[in-house]
Amino acid sequence: MSSQKGNVARTRSQRHQNAFSFKNDKFDTSVQTKRINAKLHDGVCQHCKEVLEWRVKYSKYKLLSKPKKCVKCLQKTVKDSYHMICKPCACELEVCAKCGKKEEIVIPINNKLEKTSEVESDKTSNGRRRNRRFEEQSSDELDFDLDLNELEDEEQNNHSSHTKNKSASAKT
Figure 1 (cartoon, rainbow, N blue to C red):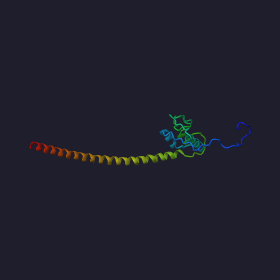
Figure 2: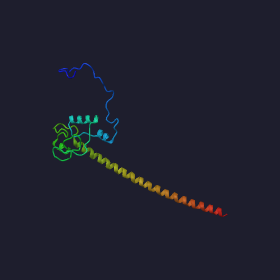
Figure 3: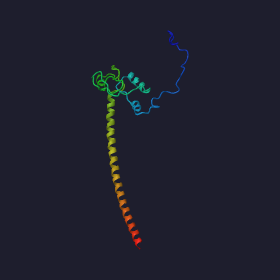
Figure 4: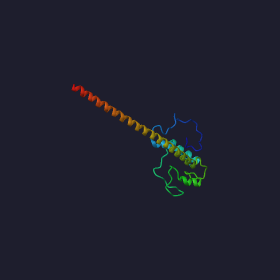
């Protein structure tokens, strides 16, 4: 039927239809899959972004094990899979990092750099909060240790007075 020349009209419906869509993290709950699903595809054109999202959606996206060589600067600086131009070169030349064409970039690379600086500032403020909490906990721990020492001293005094009472009653 499909091999007949000029026969482009199909007369019947699809024989097998899926009851549910494919989920790439249904059985594979590894850290690598979570990292791939959370990846932001920046510095690429709309077509390349759709291709990369399709690869992620159907578990065809594979991470790089080591950096690749950039075709512009010839340095091993390409850290994203399926890209052929490093981010600094793509940003400087204003081209897609995957296909190399001068097309409109959907998510610019600079936005990610600003977000990372915001994230770093949040991390430092969180670090300060953690330090404060640690100082409070350490001071609480010290107070707790002092209380334990006082209790141990009281127990020793009670124990020694109790043994004195036993020895005195044993003598009589």
